[in-house]
Image (cartoon, rainbow, N blue to C red; front, side, top):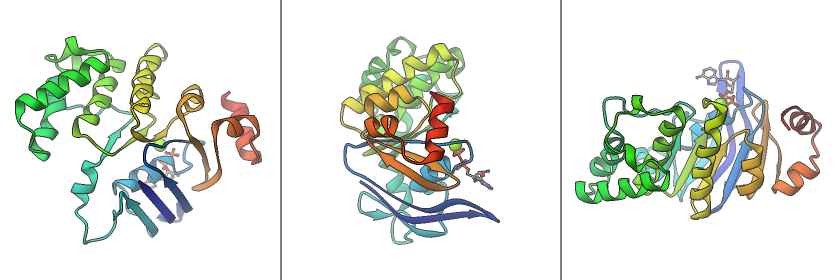
Length: 240
Ligand code: ADP
Ligand code: MG
């Protein structure tokens, strides 16, 4: 579903991605962790070309995201992205936040888009909030709307960039529950997160990055049970 081959990204003198290669299979759940500044967001953002890699290639569902022959907007429709900040449209209701893109970009009729949106809101446990504005919701509720908005477009892949790190501790669980539900439904997911309980429960593979490099990549059991790289050992000691 995603094939990243020898990706490099430079910001001036700084090497944000240092020869990163990563394959994600259909339905696979990959968790990416690593210290702040290690290149996790840059990697995720390169997948939908919010950043452009300087060297190497990124193929999403058979399409090179950096090829001028491919329509990046078409590719982006297949990629649902959830950020740390919820990025909801403040002047639109919760329901409108979920129906706008499917109606405009997928040309889905209003009634159908609204039905689907209500279904998704029910799934994330906030169907009673369909007609309120985002400012009326708690952070956890806003993030659940943001998460429900992505599958409203029927993407093939969902990318999460630290979706719980801006939330109050008591709201983290409800957002992770929604992500677990999506994972169970077979969605292909790439999640940058430090929620190691989530990683243990849903990840097929966990990737550890530091200084723009992938230093370790393993199934949860080995990743946590027998970390090999000293920097990963240190990282796990700090966060667990
Ligand atoms: P992470 O998500 O792991 O915290 P990032 O991918 O955001 O790390 O950043 C990796 C490195 O690249 C950091 O040193 C960061 O300061 C730098 N960086 C990220 N985006 C930019 C940018 N637009 N301009 C300059 N430097 C950047
Ligand atoms: Mg980041």
